[in-house]
Length: 523
Picture 1 (cartoon, rainbow, N blue to C red):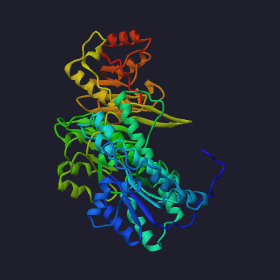
Picture 2: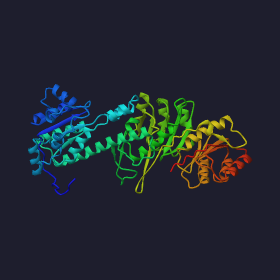
Picture 3: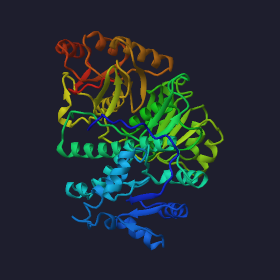
Picture 4: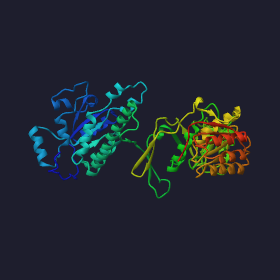
């Protein structure tokens, strides 16, 4: 590519004389074509789009009439032709380009309207295999989009029906399209093709099971701008498809911190299937109370009993339909957000009386394939989500005493919860209820002491409780502290050089101890 003749940008308003239209999504295309014709614009189109416009009684020329070459290879080749791309790429404010077009008998396009084959919708279907997916990789479309976007000083590019109304209004009002609009649409076009290519690349990464990849490709649509980030002086936005997972049907839009807390609550409540009523209370992304019960009311009361201070202004999530009786109980405190798979009409009527409370329907649980991405200096860290499910054969009783049936049930319950608590993490439970949670301390003993203090403050007895630790006990002092508090069973990953010392201590104290071989650090 020569850079000897850099042409100054044409910043003048653009009069539209010829338009090239080739769209997979034909939403609004007839109305747009009618506006173009009323403004004296000649329309050239391809295959299905040509037929759609022609059937509407609108004058349109088929691309093959220009190229003098028929569509071929089942439509794979139709716009990949110099007549088309010279017309898109010509810098019509540059005399040499105009002379070249004239010598070749090619006319310029001032408007290109293209959206691409529905690759995302295709691969979302369960019956789609690689052969079918590849047929929905668009070639000509992205080529036209990129050409028009590159030549935005002389060409306007539309890639989405969402852009049509603004374009029509500007054309009708001014009879031209401004430089600012063309630049913005060019930016949108390159984002569109980047997202499309990212989608295809990520699909092929999954097909080839390539981990890790040489380049991280991330492209997510703007879901909404946020008022601010963690603090009012920080700008923020959320990207992705959150509305596929939640329906926030009452209250103000979720804030940055609300999204973080909601994510934490959803991840934890998803640990419990709907066969047993469960309630999760989250504050600052940490659980402050979790319990099961014979019904949601009992589950809520037992979860709230763990810590009756922290839940104020927190997040409450349940795993079953929330009815009026449960709503009355939850309404007894102020909570930022209440999450449930569904709400009864009378529950909604009661809970919506508080305007500042958000109500969220959980539409589906988080995907097991989503990666966790965190920004750091110079780039990002990427990892799989921690959704590891213990297999029976991985659970190893290392103590002389086997856990009782109730202890074993409580240990499994505690293990579900501890991986959602910030490290260092200690969780005391009994009979499907958290009694004390110690989180975010710089030593495991500190976390144990914090959990004990919280249980004591809540007047909950730790006698006969089960304890979960997110990582191994490096010294026996953690086991001694647990036994002193009243725990009779411990679940932990194991893996310390002092494991035998810890096991011996458990045996001396009569504790049952399980090693999982899996840790759950959460930084």
